[in-house]
Image (tube, rainbow, N blue to C red):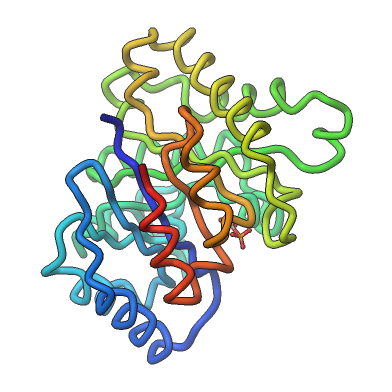
Length: 253
Ligand code: PGA
């Protein structure tokens, strides 16, 4: 079975102490994850080591960075490289979140470099794609998402691409409380899998975990995750509340 992933994206929230307590509260629930299920915590850079040591003893609990820089190393004050993350044994990194594309002007070309650097350093990228509202209203979301994948991902070989986790996050659903319906999520996820199949063949496409993101909550996760092509979620707001994220972890297939 494909990996089913509940990924928490804390964004720029919580103090160190609050983050530590949140992880403690979640771990205290003692949710045992079978081998095809992963819980991933994308925490701010200064919390990575704390979070890593919190989850160290747990099976299938992992830590992620929320970003890395698109260059290998050098005079880029304030940035963090994939190599640095690897040196801290961080196994996952979110790449191309829509907030980074919007506020930090990250382009598909830059994201393609980030994917390369992550893979070179054995970090599983969680690659985000998804359309803004005007594109959805114009009905051209499929072409929009296809271009994001083509320009950032399709230079990879099948063996490399298989390492990437995709997160479909319609921008109009992020932080708005306006979740895509499970039918809308399934439709886009099936489309994403079909373009992966046209590039890499159906067998490889079937191995990709494709997460849904955008107002995933404790009360809608079960329905969303039940869709055949939805392999879990990338969760912002609801990942900041232990009881909510615990329910979302339990909703994994
Ligand atoms: P949200 O954020 O769950 O608060 O909508 C999701 C995300 O941005 O990854």
